Image (cartoon, rainbow, N blue to C red):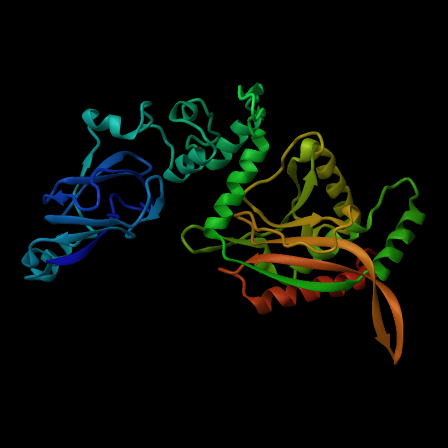
Length: 404
């Protein structure tokens, strides 16, 4: 007897991932050769996957609803016949009998009850989208109602539908000892929560902080206000411009990492700005082509996008690779931001405060601000992130020249 791993098989050209719909055997149960042991779902169908060995199921290596890459180990089988596991008379036979290539059978009507009560097998819904929908608490029936922009239902289509779905009314729980009100989590927060949860499962975060001298940025803000008193210009706008210009020297921050471990570098930076909405909701304003805009056009685009977001429009899209979170007006000096895929990083700006500096042997106070960045360590390393932060620092401290 020997333990053998069962792998997700390659079914169809170009297939890269599949969702584990259901397991049909429990650990400790006997399995016959060619007996269906689990169901997997691809972009095209739900399939019963048959076991290439006779033996006993030892353990499942993945949970139901997990989206797995093709070739990933999914189970361990204790085979009862050594010869079947080791019989490799020639290369072709061994490949045909490999545990990575079990046979498959399309799901029959009699098996439909194993998956769900609503038949969505023939809809163009990738496994990633179905997993995302389930994380939002959506049913298969809900999925049939969601319109798609491209013909294939994508996670962003699901997010748009959830955000525009009317909220259900509150209800009182009938417990006289511990009365409470049960409310549905707001739709936008559900979408954000799902993105954050996904980020925790795939992103390897790392965080660095740098201290920027803030005096010159404050002086530059005052001078620009004097030129145009009617313009409501904030130091944050200048800071955002300094960040955008820094990306020109560090193009990795206008990139993201795909599910296939490929870096997608966009031609231009889509810079996200976190905006607080009603009832502590969090939306994202976006300045597209941020690093190539001049100062006048940058501040106009930033103000326009923030104004749109404050009307309830979330401008987040898949090409937003870097986001800014401004906590200066809340008196928060430090914070550790989170990265929301597919972004490469998030920058936190803390409140300005006085700090001691020694110049030419003399001690004096200067106004400073902490700039903290969390980045995806899977594609960006510490030195590259530190160099980017230092470029931001240089641009902040030279902001008057950059804005002219």
